[in-house]
Amino acid sequence: MKPWLKDYFTFSTSEKYGVVGLISLIVILLILPYFIPMFQKTELTDYSEFAKKVEAAQLNKVDSNSVTNKPAVGKYPSTSKKPKSSNRYQPKPAQLFKFNPNTATEKDFIKLGISKKTAANIVKYRSKGGNFRKPDDFSKIYGLSDNQFEQLKPYINIPKKEFAKKSFSKPNKPAPQKKKYKPEPVIVDIATADTTELKRITGIGSVFAKRIVKFRSSLGGFHNLNQVSEVYGIDEEKLTQIQSQITFSNQPLSKLNINIDTSKTLAQHPYINYKVANAIEKYRMQHGNYENISQLKNIIIIDDELFNKIQPYISTQ
Image (tube, rainbow, N blue to C red):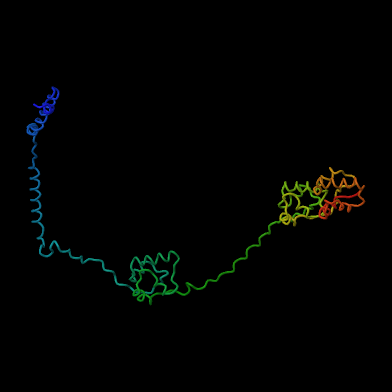
């Protein structure tokens, strides 16, 4: 045998056992179906009892047919429909009589030939506040045909007094309401008021009251009402809002003496800064005491606008 053929047909010992076992298993599986029926028990079902019951049932059916009347096979074939019953409900003929659709009962409407459903609709319509003012209103009922209405119209009787105009009494005049108490408007003198009085003004709280008093004190007093708008947080709009609640009285003002006060004292005034205060003091040292306050105009940095602002707060004595 050639070497390459030998490789395909030569088996080891373990391979031989495997081939033999596989062949044995195949043979067993092939012959096994022939031996299985030998080990199974076949149970036969007895239908004799069932056959007896069927036979008895058929005999009972034949007996019952013999007792009853002969079936009318030719008269009514099984494929034809059964005749309609002669006892079918026939509506009663309408009984026409005069009626008020606003007061008639459901039974009255049915007697008049109106269907039960339509009669119920009429009663339901009235229960919800509906009414009939004239005979033609009755034609609007859903379910009532035009022919029915024309037939019933001559019998509709709606008394006129049902819808006579009711006399309405004049409504009682409402009792006069007591006028609500309105406190008198607050009027505060802005030139003299303290913080407690200022807080009575609508729109002025504790913060604004303190600022007004502090600014007024540092100025030496207000010499006109418009100075209130110079307080921090109070602009012209705010002043217009509170103007109806304040008044102004001329009060003596605390004044600075430009012939005595130092530049440091003068600079503490809100309208005079340190530069202006220093110029006032130097002018006095160079030219002597001021004879009148108009001499301040000789200082270059003091223009007419500034002079008019500080004039009420300075003096030469």
